[in-house]
Image (tube, rainbow, N blue to C red; front, side):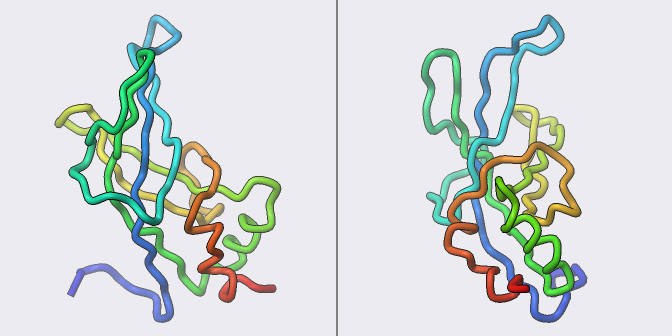
Length: 135
């Protein structure tokens, strides 16, 4: 048993998150961090694996998470899917281990957004939740 309350009929999609670190542009932050992509098909690699370094920017595989789709939240998913820019939201939390962040959550529920939006990727393009979200 996982210890979490599960809504019957929920779907969980495993994803990986790519995060870019670039030099900060203000005197208050040495680095600027932003999630750049959520991948449905991702390589197995440890969190914070460096994928590419170029021109002062570093691309990391921040880690793996699950996007949970609950039948009770279909209105939020539908609103996201039919918006001008369907999005996924990524939450990073401060952590002691390098590089100082841990992947906490990925959601596509516009009602739960807690962080920066990013363009939706594979899990939206395949429309895996569209049958549940159909009006």
